[in-house]
Length: 156
Image 1 (cartoon, rainbow, N blue to C red):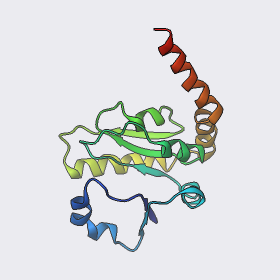
Image 2: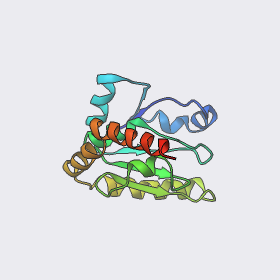
Image 3: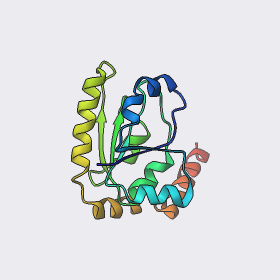
């Protein structure tokens, strides 16, 4: 199965160098940072998106997660805290699955748990992901939710 990696290593170039032999395998394609139509084409053609994060980095929010599930692509994600952006994005079985990783896990344990999560996500019906993801990330609903939060804060 072809693996396309979007983005670039910003915070851990040493990790990339250490594992360069894996990133340069024939079925792995490093896409770099892509935007707009090109990014959406890559996303929409995927069978599953895989979201990984370093155990010491806290992702506050990631808009691409909404783009992915709104395209009907389930996400196999990982979280070290169980309460971050990927957990918020994948709050329904139709959207994918999050593997919660104890910080004590070895690299091998992380790989095994994440690969099991990917395997389950590859079996999710993309039509269900599209339906649930499109509703959850509908721009009008998102704007209404933002105004709801603003109004709640004003009432304090």
